[in-house]
Image (spheres, rainbow, N blue to C red):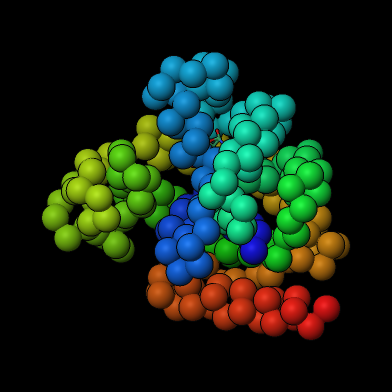
Length: 222
Ligand code: AMP
């Protein structure tokens, strides 16, 4: 099963992706996490990506597609994966079709989590992320049991440097211009599934799971 989680920054891709990873036993491939790791480890990719991340701009497609190509070769992807934050441009979506062809996997659906801009700013400015495992929290909406400590792995919770208001606004602009055209792209392929991304986290998760089950039923009928 290959699933794309789409939507503006802060729509809940990371939160829902982590839960889906646990439910379905396939990895969540979070491009933002991979890039932040690369920056932290001073790799070639990290050096190329750092400035873009700091500005909230998109890292060039060529760099991103190489990172994804390499990641998809790993054995944990052989039964499927959840894409979080990739693709973010039409060029990346086209490259993904090629990559999937090479590894003989099909896209089940592109789930678009719909969240208004005002909610995005509120969510991201209160977001804290585990430095070790990337699990997201919110100081008000989903705080950890113990302040600044990850419930999942005990890691330290930090505020991402791009979760400050000026950068959040820049990322929303980038989303509108470069990423939102993907909604039409996947709609035309018959793969787009819209899910309301506001409200209770469990309800959103259940809505995504029902949709996955329905797609899988349709797939086995084919
Ligand atoms: P995220 O953690 O998904 O919010 O991504 C954080 C930042 O990483 C973005 O603001 C971009 O600078 C970069 N990034 C993540 N995914 C991509 C992508 N698919 N294409 C280009 N840049 C990306």
